[in-house]
Image 1 (tube, rainbow, N blue to C red):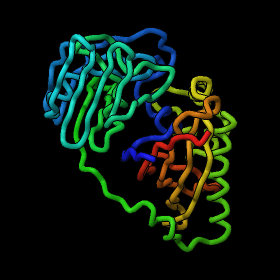
Image 2 (cartoon, one colour; image 1 turned 90 degrees about the vertical axis):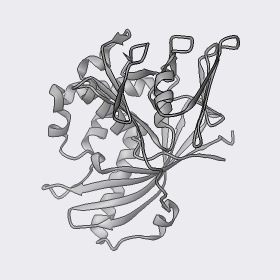
Image 3 (cartoon, rainbow, N blue to C red; image 1 turned 180 degrees about the vertical axis):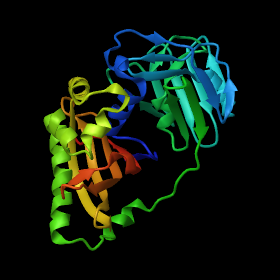
Length: 303
């Protein structure tokens, strides 16, 4: 078993919805690469990559070389072997231009089998932003409103996430049952690929989903489209309410995500803090904006 530490990353539901809302309705229907003039900032300083960033299929691709050099990494391009290697004290990257494979800290990294990790070739190849976000302390955010890409280092968090399982809060039986049922419905909706059920467990869906001129019907179609691209299985491992108030609670939530079709694929094990709120109707809902991923492990399947 090898660990991959990440903080503040989103699971499918939150990541997909926020991506759609930040990029606008056109992003979901984009069938071809969309090249735009986008400014790039690394550690608050603007840089000028030779290759312009690209938005393709809702993904953000950024020139690898200019970013890692601005972050202080040692960059090496072997033109004969078509291999790029980059090293620093806390992370190492390798890009095989011939195969299109990317590696982080010695392990192959693939975000989605439906999207390439790199675009272009040569020393100025572009990489998907998720390659940086998979590290413990580098983040790449895209601001669609101002057309900016911001790259920055974070301080690595040290969280004793395993001990949280033993810190159960005192919760009235009715609320405890309702919260755990809510999480079961969330997992069930993901496995059933039921967009309406997924939207139903979210806080104030009417207000949340109509942001940036997206109607509930549009978001439903976008979620259904994403379900078609990702055949994933979600399995709950543990749920413990660790913080409770009459109208808000935090749940220590552990679950796995695996490929439904490929039993030999890598399994992701998420340690999560899920935020839930009680609405005026007396029911509990997910409050995805308050969520935090404490830790993620990549596990090799036993099959």
